[in-house]
Structure formats: structure tokens, C-alpha cells
Length: 181
Length: 200
Image (cartoon, rainbow over all chains, first blue to last red; front, side, top):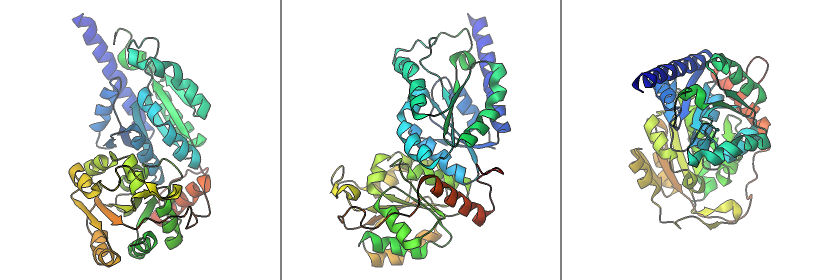
């Protein structure tokens, strides 16, 4: 058990480093976050990067509005949260970002997937993507490490589409194949 | 004091400040007083003009950013004060036009009905430069100092409740046009790139 656990930690750390590197490549200079445990290591890695201004928020919609303000300062920004947090800020995404056509890039852990056995994530797993489709918010799913280099393209797609764009990170990507929780 | 008179004083002292206005009466008064395109007028996300202003202030650290918030909006997102305090943005000034009512829906009584000490809340969140201003004379006297001091600061403007939906008309443009007018105004003033070479 300890051997596989070490191996999982190493893979997860590598994935986090590669995501961080692609965010840097995309020109991200501000990150606003409220943690979900799947993306907590990524958030802490970004927080340690003095090239990215990191803002810890009290509610996910703050992250949305902070990134929207940063857009007008000419600063590329990202909002990091879990799927539950995404559900809490759909009103702000609609009335601020859709209303004014302000792009905002969200990186969200895709909680509630079939390999996420937390009962309190179940509804998020079933209803998050249908909700995004109802709002016409584009999304993309990064499921494998070899797809991480798509991140700069996803960011550009967000700017081009001038609306909220959700980039989901799956459990398999951020937790590895062997994890159970 | 009346909201319009308080906003007029703010407008006269704004100097180079960029404005961010919460949705509602105060935004309409700011537009009436300034006609400024280098201000952003929220058309939604009530409660989150404060977060928008913080993101702007952090992105343009040498540009004064004045947030024209309202008590109804503040109460929807009191957590913004914690985030503001934690970031310590020296260029951010947070003004709250407090009339104690939800004016644009007919001056209905607000949550907690006048008992909330917003200055106390802000100080407890970690914003030490916090005060409440009750009269125009006091505002005229204190505002130059508020404009000159380091932020983040928090200033409640106690104004009379007034009735009348859209007593002051809103700005004459909206949505995407507001985005482009505001973004282009900031590009011109600060030589930054908000929109890319293809205009998005």
C-alpha cells in the first residue's frame, strides 16, 4: 500500500506541475480560488508562484468578479474551484459575464463523476454539465496528462467566445487511477 | 444628506480614479454626475461589484479605483471585506452609499433594519481605515484625505432614503457596449491591452 501511495503522490505532483506550467504559458498572472480537495495541491502550487497574484476568496462568485475586473486591467486571470462552487455562482456568471460578454476562465474539479464516491457530490455530477449547456457556457474536459497542453488553447477559446468557459479536471487526472477517495 | 449630493462631492474629488458602480441607484447618480466611460456600471451580480473592483485594482496597482457600492449590495457579499483586507490593495477605496432601504424596488426595508454597523464589520474584517460620514460638510472636509490615503479604505455615506424607481435615469448604454467603452477607455488612458489584435 505504501508503495502505490508513493507512486500516486508522485504522479499527482507531476500533473499539478504540468498544469501550472501551462497556465504560465497561457500568460496567467492572477488566480482567484476557493479550494476543492482535488485541486488543493494546484492552488497551493500557484500560491507559491510569485509571478501569479493569488487571491483567496470567501465565496466562488468573488473569484468570478475578481477575474472579470482583472480582464479590464489587461491581466489574464483564472478562477479555481470545485463543481459545487461552480453551481453557486451561475447567477453571477449569467448576469455579469453573459450580460456584458466578459470572458472568464474557470478551472473546476469535475466532482460527482462515476469514480467520485462522495455522496454529497452526486447531484453535481448529474446536473452540472446540463446546466452549463442550458446557459450556453462552453466547457472542455482534461482527463489525461497528455491533454494538459490544451490549456492555452482553452484559454484563448474563452477569450474568443466572450463568456464563461469551464475547463474541468477529472479525478483520474488529478488523483490518479489508483485513488479511492 | 441626499445620495445625489454625496455622489456629486465624490465626483468632484475623484481625480484620476476609475469608478466601479454596483447595480442600482448609486450607479445612476454616478453616471449623472460624471458621464464617465472610464467607469464600469454593473448590470447584475449584485454584491460583487466589490470583487470586480478588487480584481481591477490588483491588475492596475498604480491606478486609483473607487468602488461606489450600496448597502444592499454590500449585505449580499459581506465576505468581500475579508478578501479586500487580505489583499491590501493601496489603490482601492470602497464607498458605500447607505440609505437603509432597497430603493429601486420601492424603498423596502433592508435586512436587519438599520441595526448593522458596517464600519464595525469592516474593521473587524481587517480594514482599519474605516469611517461613516453623516453630512455633506463632513464629506467635503474628509474626502481629500480619504482620496490621498493608502487603501484599502472603507467609507459609509449615510444618506436619506428616497423613493421613486429610476428617479435618476441609468447610463445610456448597456451590456457589451459598456464592456467595450470601458475597456477602450482604459486602454487609451493607461496604454494597456484589454482586447487583442482582433478586437476580442
